[in-house]
Length: 547
Image (cartoon, rainbow, N blue to C red):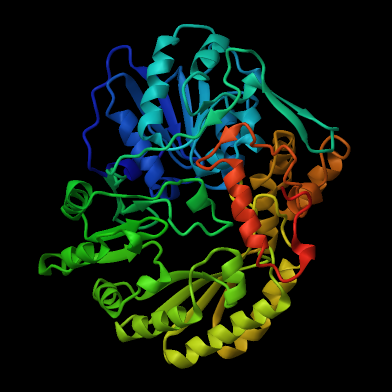
């Protein structure tokens, strides 16, 4: 145990003194301390629990932990990266807790989880968790603890039945999944008894006080950073984007009531400030916020901004960032093809992207990082040529500006209009095409691993049968070969890898997450899907049974 990690922390909240009968709770992050403590979601949940006198909380990471209770009643995991499931299983074993929820006894802790990965599609992990919290923690967490206290001394089954009544709390073992065949699609998802809700609604916090760091430490992956959530969700609604669709509606932090007090509090302990959100510059008072941070008293502040809407990049913004020790800016353009951006609802034109590069350079920034994607539904080979052409134009328009293109493969995500599409098997070749044509032009091309995209798609579209596959793969290592080996071993018991990854699914089939209700009804997602496919230039890209 490395206590020096904890002694380096500067807390921005006051932990409560636990009551004599406080609930012994372990709150884990399934990765190293430096990664976990940099997660704003983890920080906020930990602080929320630590400020309650009815909870006695201890933190657990893969490389360190606080003193753990001998008999914990609750064990929570914050999950923000798919492949961290391996560490979840390892941590459970280190605490001598069975990895399968059905094997746990009355005197063992309830294992709960939350975070973006589990909220989107909890099914591949369903058999490892007793309880899954879907959505924003602000109200959900308190309701969970209060309901647990009512049944604290009851049997495990009674606890789970009571918790399943709380909006946003999903108890996987109380739902039965049937399949058309062992290796076919889902036939039905039903609660096992009438007192269990048929669907679980993701919880959405609608207040205007958003999250801010509860701890600052030099041991974080981003050293001494203080993070403030400026906006939540994104109004753009790109058709593939879970960060927008799953977290709707778009909410902004109150400027006077939340943002300024939070920033002042953070800058009293550190000079490194991170503004977080999927589309930070779309806060209605973003310019006022920039002017506030431009005050001379904050001259030594290092500023980082998560993601910037391309057409909001002014020379003034670039100047302020350059003065605040930021050298480059990140924008998501997805493609150089106007047609493809129309398909995905990216309201952006090439001249705006070019102007962004010009403004970034004029403001004193030295680099511009663009995010692109290949394999997007409706993409044709000429769309890739247009991406190459755009990068060439940017080089000419802003000579000397270092250009980086980070590029991923399209991965279908639950609760988005593109959830029915599979991964394009041509995507790997398309990444290689861009690599070949961009490198000679001096563009730093950084493709995300295609194999990793395959694994991501498998998990993002997986059903409950994948739990056994995931358990097998961790013994083989997390390469694509391990997954193929595990599929081979389970042949006939679960569908093959192509079913989960590459198949276009019918819009009439039951999806693994059909019983999880996101912000928008399926009828709206189908409308958005129809709008996207209306821009396709060749019909073979379209889905079967589009209703």
